[in-house]
Length: 255
Image 1 (cartoon, rainbow, N blue to C red):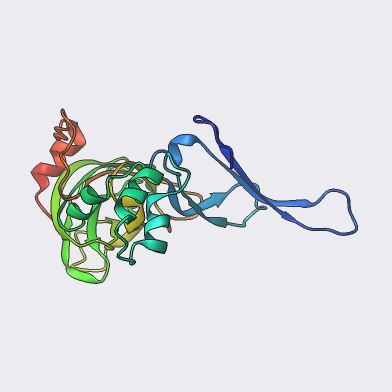
Image 2: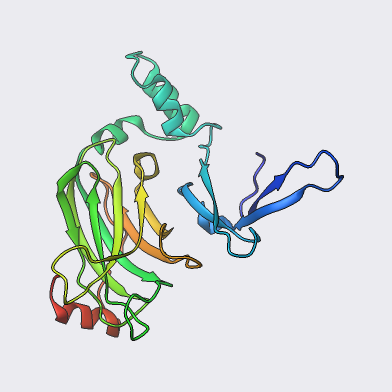
């Protein structure tokens, strides 16, 4: 679509009624540009106006095109397996992406910072939760790390950094749980989200993600930063735990 930077995108689901001039709305959602720029979007979003007691979602995939009018991942998936001598130059011309740099960054250590979350639901009787976040590469259970648990908050700040051995094609899954001191396993889930490979390559990710399965009526956000192999974190990215809740979490020790 002919998109102008700063525009929002509105999605409306309607029921086609052939006997009426007005089709009934089944739900809608409006996405501000910050939700899908600059890294696109690939997740379920909640629909409003879906009817009393109904929870409806819409699965979306938004791809931001390169300067040449085609997304790098879309082009590479179609033509990248063909060893053509002109292919690297063509990809760079169409997408503005240096293919040699992408290949160099395809594998190695990915640096992940779990910064914060907001709007979590309460899982404890006191009206709060003790949230922590687990980061893992799906299909590789030995590649994971987790934050400390932050006591009695619905808006935790972790600033937890970790590194994982990454291969091109891997996704990153973020799962938030409520730590229950009385349980040794199966802590209650507060939501999860997966960053697919195409959202990570080649420039990483820095922004908010909406957590799925977070509880009826809740749309919490998770703030993360992912630096891909071969790239350098931006200057001033201290990600230091300066907030009171982060300090409490550091003192509580690992879950």
